[in-house]
Length: 253
Image 1 (tube, one colour):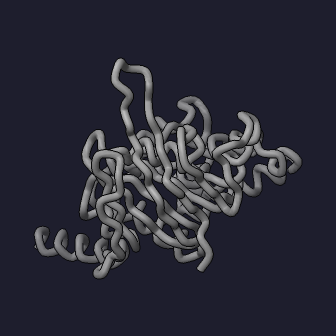
Image 2: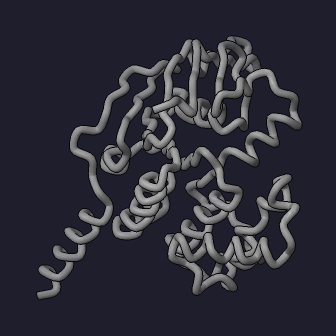
């Protein structure tokens, strides 16, 4: 399987303080198209910086980053933003939805900044956004604002928004951090189904239980990759959810 991400001696050094901080140190790795990777590490390990670089939110100060065969390290500011908008979908811990805007309009928003999406008629944009909401199981609440939705429902809207421009890569930063266990399984199940459909997923998490829903776990420490392993006994969200429901039934009986 071909690599969607290739990092070769990637570096990121911050010079804002008196002493330079090497947040990422000579990281070389590949992530195959269609993989599901969890990146873990303690505070200061470099995982957040790595995520920002992978998401084209920040640039490396050394090495190369090939995304879908393109070296994005040397792109202009506009080219950098274009790649980010066309090829990458983002899901955040705090959802980052527009508070006074409906779920449908929140999902439509990225199309306004996408060249191909902006060519669609208003109805075509609306139809595509509605279809994407339905795909993640939140279509019936298309007209609700975030304040009218639960945390899990808001995250579903956020996932739909991340998918609207048909990205080749989905980046999720602590996507279950604000959710209870049951809702977390629901969201992880969506990621697993999307991954089964061929979408590459990279998820930052500090929870071992959450990381085990991925296919591969990368652990960072002091800016370096310290461990990179395949998950041998992968957790399946639907199975874990059924276990949770069975335990609840036993408690209620």
